[in-house]
Amino acid sequence: MPVRPASERLVFPVQGLVEIDGCPRGLSGHIVEGTARPGDEIRVTGSGSKARIARIVTMGGDLTQAGPGTPVVLELDTDIGADRGDVLSSARRPVESTDQFEAGVVWIGKNAGLTGRTYEIRLAHQEAPVTLTSIKYRINPLTSAHEACRQLEKGEVVVC
Image (cartoon, rainbow, N blue to C red; front, top):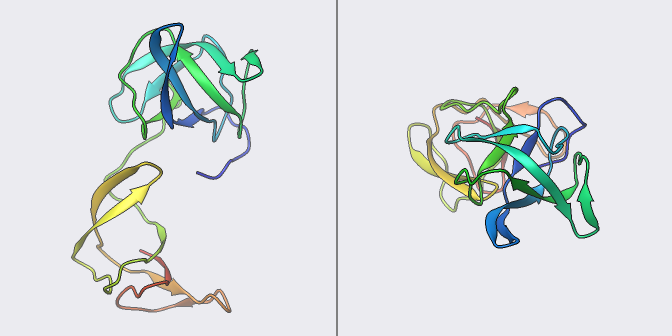
């Protein structure tokens, strides 16, 4: 995920699990948005489980806060069952999830992408089945113009 400016909402994709002092409550990754502080209540986007940040651990020692782009291990006050690929956010401004969205994609399939068919999408460390419901336009790589298209061809950048 690209790094965004600091905001009130914490967004932290979990890249790995770390044992700290024998406890499996450390979650490693990079903060993408917002600021994390010990005592902040966080939420796992998928499950809704909540915990508080007990410590922010780095190779250089503990931090009192960490912002966008900072690689850290968040030690939580309780095990909430978060795993690699989960996204943590602040409990007061959680990341929303949806079953319908618009996305800009680079088509890497060998075969053409067609509306009405189901495909696998990969975002960070997670994969999920998606159905392509409509193709809005292709982006011309030379002019950045939006061009009509009926199917996705290998290497094309499209909004669907």
